[in-house]
Length: 548
Length: 68
Image (cartoon, rainbow over all chains, first blue to last red; front, side, top):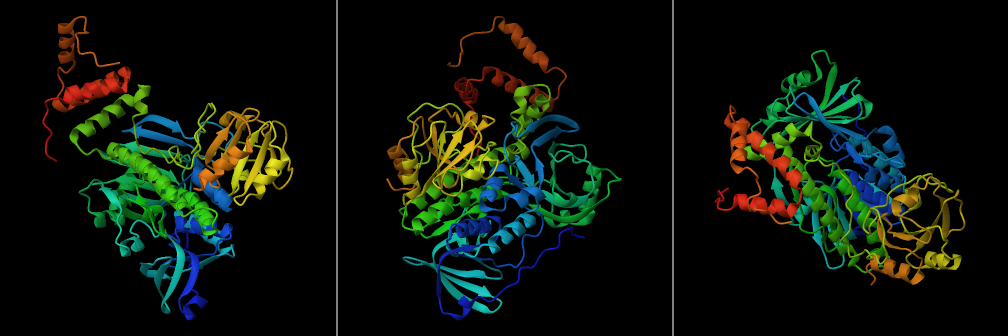
């Protein structure tokens, strides 16, 4: 008995199907979290977008469950962060056990003063429902279920798609195609492109169970637990009293047999106790891979999410990195489409996000090598680390049960203006914005003021009103956000005043009177100075948009 | 820092004794685990990545790679 009943999203015949080959500016293939986030971001920027999905339901089974802080912040920007964060189970603490002992625990968000927690656990189907609702509320988005792409032909200035529906097939063209159709990406295959990398020789059983339990909302990971000797296990709490359990099975396990309830139940009973009352909602056996496409941009075809890169699940770096792909891509695509940036700006999507994918793959591979040692000596070192970790602090840092998703710092990006002034702290150009509590005319959180356009944040000394007005009227708009140490209020369209009453914002950014930070539309720092200079800000915006 | 391969042990023979004694009564698997822990403890104490890399290269020197 499932606690969630899948909403069926009805197929509707589109007028396009009766009108020859209709052209659209952007088409997104795939209505998973990544495709839906892309559609929401585009539609919010008034870019008309058609989303094609070959199914009529959200995902079956919980699948991606751990939504990272950065992803929630992006969802906030897209206008659906609150329902997702509210429904999900917030957690910051992870515990690692070796055999029957707690080896150590970590707090992923040790400091206060952030709107969102390190993670929220929520079944992928719920996240998709929230995203569908958000996308459906935006007039510029056109979501088409049971529309299966069966042909892709890149042409000189556009892409031609052939689409199969319950009413037969039809064709569309688009200027830009965003491909977010998952790890097995049919569109990637149709284009003869491949994701290259490594397949791991191990199998994992993944089960969702419904259970009333007092376990705290934390991530619990076991190496070699008494209830599952010589393998690992992982426990996560999700919404509606649903729990995710992962059992490492080893490469020789029979995937079909292990999926059967008579094999799963004894494993669960051993773990949860003979008296535990639970129901199995969903189970699957998986192997995993770390792979990526050599390039995410192929002319007018842009790959995002699992279609472009896949990682092992340890670390929650799959869906979270896919959402960051979209966050990176959409503002650039809009600037290119409106003629405000050259096409080569899209190459920086490839540069920045392949670097991020490599970072995710590196972390994921390292975690996998620790969890699934490939040789006897690798296993010996792993056990040595676990043996030392309880008493010796240094060894705890070597224990790797998955390095949990943190956003990539795009420090090497060509869009950054290198620092000319001295700064302390972590906010180097390329870093996604750190949150802090503020007072102001809108939200109580700093990130809510970085809204999808370039934003210049100025600490203390005000930016002259005429300069702020000029930046606001530039073709690529930049808003000024003035930070004061007292309570904030609105000044004008071009300038908003917020108060850093706690002083946390200034601390996190090393903000002194006169300090200015320039944020991109995706809330990444791209330049900073100790004093305001209009020409320098304009040059940094030109650089961050491929216009210099 | 560079890897010091000149004699640095005040009582080399005694050290060697203690190292062998450390493994007395252990089977091969247990010994391997003790050695691994020892390497990790010493590596953390040394810390310097260049020294550790030089030591790893020196330790590996002469060993023929096995075909995968």
